[in-house]
Length: 365
Ligand code: ATP
Ligand code: MG
Image (tube, rainbow, N blue to C red; front, side):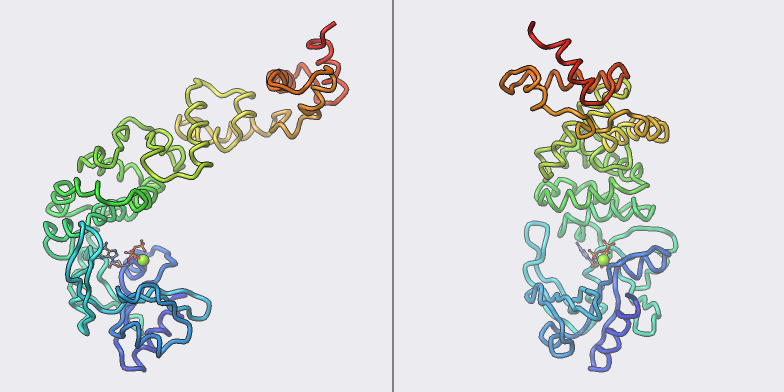
């Protein structure tokens, strides 16, 4: 993908424009981290880009960003710009195209996100900030007092980068992240959740948790329980313990999983029946949260006599038929009895045996 991006940069320069790979890709390249998201910035305006490339999607003409589809890959391309006015501590309402890349870099969030790569794959460090990357420091471009206030998303981006890259936040930047933390209440829950998902799913999520607590952001984010939860590597496992199902956007499936997991977590120990009932995934998260061996769990799961209701050689309708009754709520109880008995080994999982068991125990004589 990188070679395609370099070809794009070449095409720009052949048409008389300046263009660079910028931001996350260059940062991660220097840190030896693989990424598949390449952002390009250029002195060409969206209109001019449309003249140079055949396959261009204009995503946001007004904000000078387009997507170039080149040899099967997608690249976000922005025109060098100055952001004039911010609204509601988030998106700029007005931008101006400029020809000077330096000014474009000055509007970016953190110094480590301003490094560029030219078409010869050389690193171009216009703001002279490469040392921050080498020293693993996160610092806003310019005075954090203004840079954090003008866009509150930067607070969470900063914590995300500190967590994922294991960087330290420069003290003054840190001070204003905390001071303007209250502005996060104006940020959409979807944007907040995207960032929090990245932070929580990191293998270094302990650091993210510490930062959110240290910077006193838990209240404004509704994460009052953060201090008390057991971190794990699964997002459902973390969100379930935070109990914010209605505060952040979750799908119906995720909400159901969180509810079930909370139920499961109320049990002190797992047994065959719980493993059968809640399934391997939720039980794995259970072990992750409780610090129990997942290897043992896997062995336990694979030696279950039945792993789901589908494995039972008898259906709810069969129960009603055998008892000569209309189907009703009672079926669920009998089914549960059958499941437990099979799992315990007192009932064999074949149609004849189950039928006999039901007649013996439930048929009115
Ligand atoms: P990643 O792609 O790993 O999430 P990134 O730094 O590339 O990290 P993007 O959201 O892809 O993040 O943005 C690309 C670049 O645009 C950033 O590197 C940064 O220079 C700039 N940028 C993104 N969001 C902001 C923001 N909220 N404020 C200022 N500059 C930003
Ligand atoms: Mg990016």
